Length: 105
Image 1 (cartoon, rainbow, N blue to C red):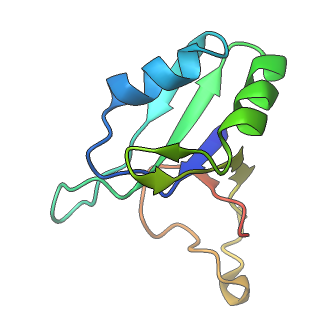
Image 2 (image 1 turned 180 degrees about the vertical axis):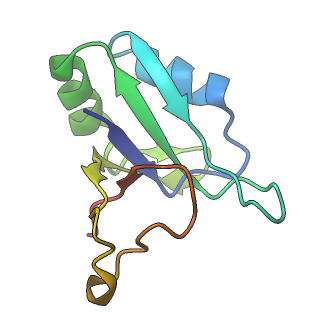
Image 3 (image 1 turned 135 degrees about the vertical axis):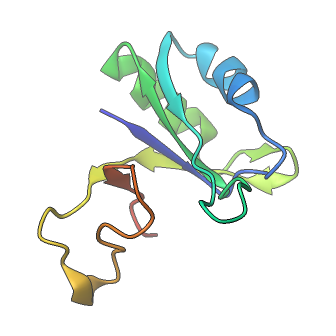
């Protein structure tokens, strides 16, 4: 499973994110997407942890928490629709590389 972390400060680094999530268990992967044209961070990340119970604890504790001046949105990422699903507001394959999108609130 993958965790979506939204509303991130653009100053947050992979190391910063790893430090926060390591408090809940072993982090196995972090993806911090950047804009292809500008190279700037896009304000969200994806985090994988070694155990689902640790992911659940991190989501429960961090969703809505203030960090680096921003209120985090933390939830389970869901796989993007393989067919593109254009009318439902998802971004299909636009944006490249990530196979997950965030859960809309």
